[in-house]
Image (cartoon, helix red, strand yellow):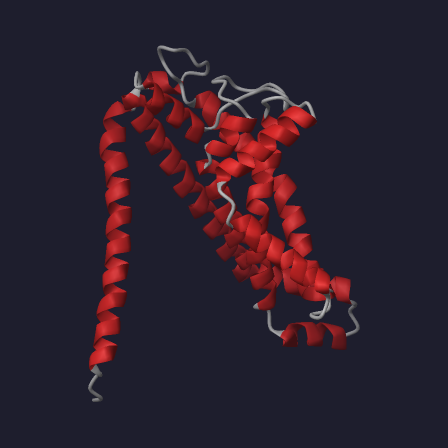
Length: 275
């Protein structure tokens, strides 16, 4: 049996140590939210209408789902089709490809509050949409667009070229090959990017405060102002009057994110088996 070198042992210790720290931090955060959130759950939090007494989370929960769906409807088609162009159609020497990638990487590093200020100046003020659901959705779609583009691009690159060559050899065109062979094979990777995008949408506050507003009622139209669960939790904690309800909201938000991730992972596995 080969003996490990001291440097290999050191790297193993660092790796396992880093993994243990990451898991410990996650366990602490989840445990802290659960311990403080469960005792504060009460039926009044799930009232259909929000009042200053019950501080119901139902309007914020509905708004979160609406905001997520709207943002994904805008960002996913743009991100996926842009990635298809970059990987399957554009030449590697094309200068436009380099510009798009640099722009995407730059957008990924911009703080969310900057997106919020842009959304307020452009969607809310310049276009005259006001603080509304649609203004928040467009702002969030711009935020998650680079993430979906990059993950989709990497997922498409991971598909073996032999799949494409086999399809071309059978007489299929490039468009049919992309939609019948490449995209189904890359779908689990694309779905991973969508899941990450959902996580960012659900947990966003700064950008939405400047664009969607903080009205604690269920929106009846795209032009209505509303607050998501994350903004609702921030508002409750900043006011200092309903800290217990803020912990309960955090627990609901955590359960929602875990549920969405579990459903998406299950769907990806089923589709991968079907493929």
